[in-house]
Length: 80
Image (cartoon, rainbow, N blue to C red; front, side, top):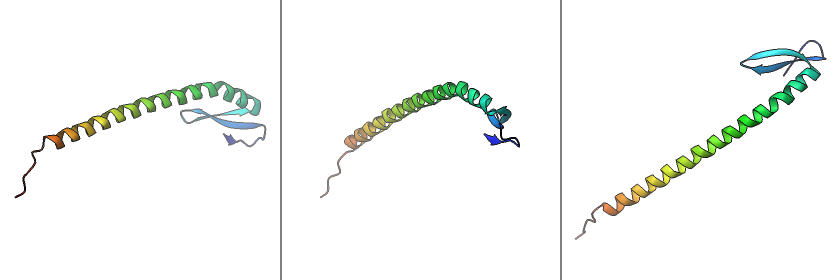
């Protein structure tokens, strides 16, 4: 929010870099309507992050397993 010349009105960022001048009570009502949508978006992002994190863990474990297989398959050189 940005302050407008009138102390009873504020500029509210409504998205896509658009700002709307509203009375303070209008801005508070708009915030009350917007908040659940933002909370849902946060929840969705958290779920996506958890899915990505679990996929990274699976790939990491797969790489570690492959590295162990490669170490086991290397022939041991005999030192005389």
